[in-house]
Image (cartoon, rainbow, N blue to C red; front, side, top):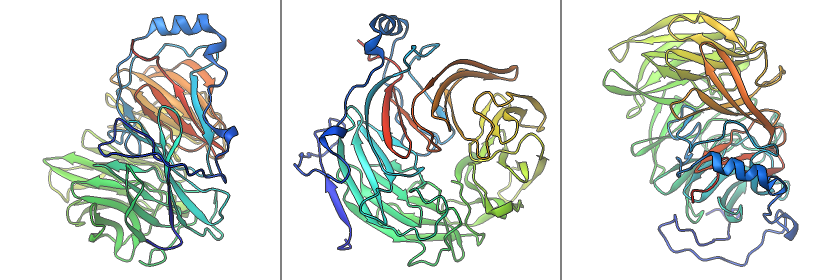
Length: 458
């Protein structure tokens, strides 16, 4: 370990962990004081009658974890417990809240552990990986490392969401640091400095991708020489392949199953492309040059169609054929389907995406035909609109956290947008929350908050 790096372990007993851990007496006074320890806030306890009615109206079982970017399947879907039709008047009960450093990094949850990345104010020029207790918000461990931002635009902190797999956590920092840590203890297992040691060029708004695990590999949108994407052995950190030579963008690639094979599908500032995730061999590339290199939103792939959406050049749909190299442009649209940061959702032949000018838009995936817009109901029209959209199981209901920090229950269908409930939950944020068990865990640049979406089963 580099002598300038440190691991701060405050380990609490955790029934979800397989190893024995002990609590230390170390306190990180720079961030956590007695005044910032988790505490119950006002909410449903102030309205016990409403809370009792809410409890009586729903039943719960433990829902899925949220181990990576965009959830268990990386597609914005979550098999949730039964949620209420409307939020209580005071909103979901806040279980705990605690201070956090800046950043847009999303949150991951496995078992009783919560993980994210931030950039603390002190010490300066460092990034931190944080692990906390889902039940209490208590810090379990932190790992921090030197990460000078220089003139990085939007330099509040890391952007990528941690990926949890097989007892390990994989992260990408804003200036190109890749880490693999033991998820239980925070011990460093391996790391790479993409910019400082491997020749990647730092993009204007920093590294924003999240790691993708495939078998024994962890794949990163790295922007290395002859390695737009790079795969490392997820256990040892040894480089296994580099694929393509496009420049670095901001989006996370996805793994898709099609015609009996698995493909890694990504969107760079130059192309929409597919690679063999085992070797890095490029199967196909379709040109899509984007202004300022802002290939951001994660693609979606359904019914043999890959869809990406960007603000300046609009949406493009790629028809994928039965052969590995078979792909062609199916349709493109640049008036109503100009998505920005938010990943689209898919259901029953239709896509729903957040568009910069018109708001939430519904269109046919096969044709690009627009059926409706919500006229900016979900989230206000803005220079950089953002909303995290998540399907609740196999229903047409969604839960969404918009950039204003409002938590929304709504229904989406080809007939239109129907909002059920809205409540202010957190400050302004672009970070994607996690939904796990019966909780939401969200963050802004000052705090991380856990809210109860459904009561505990009796």
